[in-house]
Length: 424
Image 1 (tube, rainbow, N blue to C red):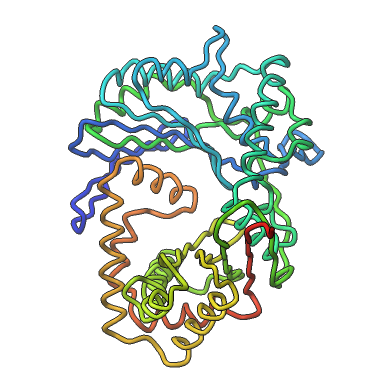
Image 2: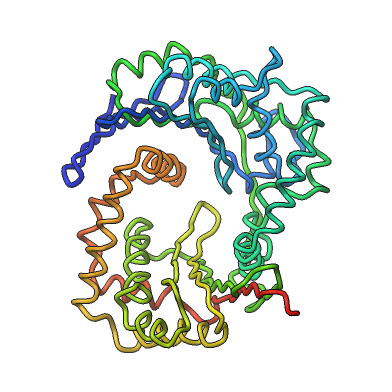
């Protein structure tokens, strides 16, 4: 068993890769709660692949990863494992992202019974024509909810402006048309291809004794490695953006604004670049910045812009999101703020203040077992050790932040997505 210790946050992470390829991580925490998340490296972008014994490319309908997430709870005994876990007083759920699908539960009591149910349903899919078809209407309703969500429309429109062929443009839930193509044969194929131990990770956080819980998990594993090699296929993306501006009207009270920057080539270490962008977000637009103070006093902003850096194996971008009744003024103010700091450089005192604040937020994440477990899973599939963020933090200086600002926040890679209230 590998033990990774971080003295800065006083945490130990126990990691073991089983003989079948499954990676298990245990993060002991002194808390009454126990949290388990089991994830497969298969998400909405994984819609094309070759199987070594097959000559033809497998092309999947959009939304199938999310569809399988829904269907895995259904069991041969007629019960739904989500309902079973809920009846135990256990908080259970699942989610699908661009690059992975995760199943999870959190509890203070009934852990052993919950783990039995959890391990059973994830490893024993039961798909029939009837139960697959039954789910279609439920997911159609979910798709309609996404379509009516202003934040989702803002986000997905920004991505469509940035990317022409990249699979990130695929809606995680799919569309009514694409989910109509999903059947039990396709669900079994992706389960058999990707829900293999060597393509999965399990994270357990809470009041655990690492050796004891590892032995318990080992005794319940029935999955075997995939006998076939799987080769995923992704579209080659152009460097340029598709278009610079898009807007939509929806039933909202205040306009939503999102400015995105497409990142084609990560010049720095991914972790250090991520840290630098978090610091830049606070420095440029945080509540203590001149930008925020000026616009707040003018009545043009009520909350600070939120900046996010999203990256995976096939894409990377920075997103700045804010609400304001003064759309044009806000877009212009954000652009001018970025160019001002590019031109004049970063004030050392401001940089250190923002760095300290961001570090505190990183540490805070480790206080919540659900948050850190989710982070550990996401980082694992990016080939990142989450503890490295704390090791690398001290190496991020003002000069690196200035370099990142100039390399990423480029005018020719910028898109603006707006969702306005419906005009009377």
